[in-house]
Length: 210
Image (tube, rainbow, N blue to C red; front, side, top):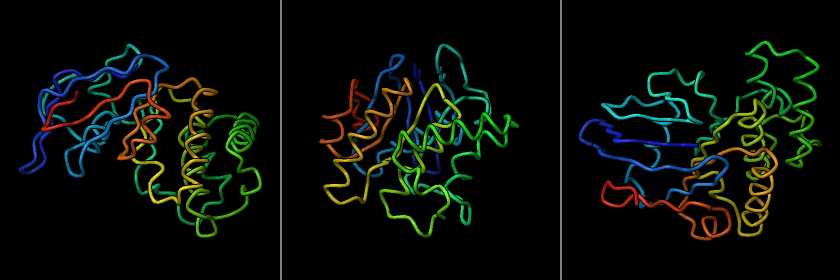
């Protein structure tokens, strides 16, 4: 579950207030709205990457408002993908489990499983500079899902792809989320993505989520 209550966020002259919505456990929420309206600000606040003035954030029946990002059990794919320069795909996927000191066998098994699920097993020894846009997005999605988060936040994860690759990625994203049984909040400008993926459609209009 993702539940936001009475959220207020300020950044310079920009302000969002009284933001509230719920995405139930296991559901796929899509948040839409014009550019610059504050969608990314909301998702960053949920992830703990942006301070809030007041309000509450609940994830999977836990209040996480005051918790550090690493304590929220969220997978996050930012708009710029942000793969680690120089890291092989295998190491990108393993990163979150390595920093948690997970056993090496567990890390290898989880990385191999996720790579197979996303169709990137053949890329495990490649580095980011050798990946196409669609391949990089698959790697970023896998990196976010490997630690088995309860919640996944996606900021325009399918942007800047050609039409055929975009359609393929929509199908892959939907099947992967069903397999992983995770609650999702996905920012997009694409009605097609919302139509194909959303259980819950949300719009940020004039500072209000409807």
